[in-house]
Length: 258
Ligand SMILES: Nc1ncnc2c1ncn2[C@@H]1O[C@H](COP(=O)(O)OP(=O)(O)O)[C@@H](O)[C@H]1O
Ligand SMILES: [Mg+2]
Image (cartoon, protein in one colour):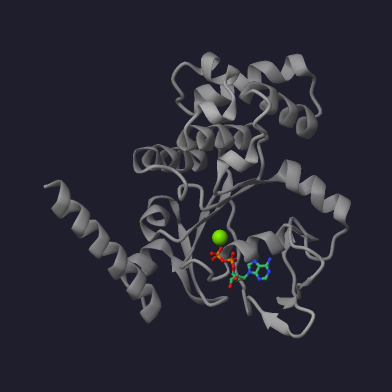
């Protein structure tokens, strides 16, 4: 993919090729700026006109990179749900959580407000949120990042998408809530049979949920394989570096809490 500047062309990502298996979680790991977000945004048609995207991305026989915008928008709302890094920006500060959930469900599922209401309650209950009725009445700024992220996951699941793409869903969340959020992702596969792309710069988070892993660096895939292969016998030196960095962080953490 190129980013066409007025002066010259910058290649942001190249030779990216992967497949997402049904009911599997594909983890995309790489340092900040390695091209993880751009890759997924390209697939979903979320990049501006200045980006030149070449290649194919098939979803149920439809080439997402060539299909018309209306069709892509429909797929994005219903079949593929995206969960973003900062839940705060995904919510409108002026509306209660419940009203925003209702709006999303009415719009994407074509149901009435009275049909949407019980689904909202079910969504937050499924995320193991305490006092779900109280939480639904709150405004975004009254909830923690971790709580909002779990609400986002709840909404995404209610839409029953075939694919969930989560871009750094644990990055803006404090560490106690990170574990809860990761647990919900691990549950998604078991309970809902949803396929997932889970993006993170944190190999630790990826290792909790991914079946397959892609390692990216400087806009390219440097290694890909099953999570077991990548985590237990990495071949690429950058993958080894990510694993070692992660290990030293964990060791330091264990040392501090001893
Ligand atoms: N809107 C943009 N215009 C130009 N370059 C961009 C834009 N967004 C991201 N990039 C560049 O693309 C590269 C990959 O970015 P990104 O996919 O966001 O990385 P990651 O998600 O892995 O942190 C980075 O070098 C970044 O500077
Ligand atoms: Mg990113």
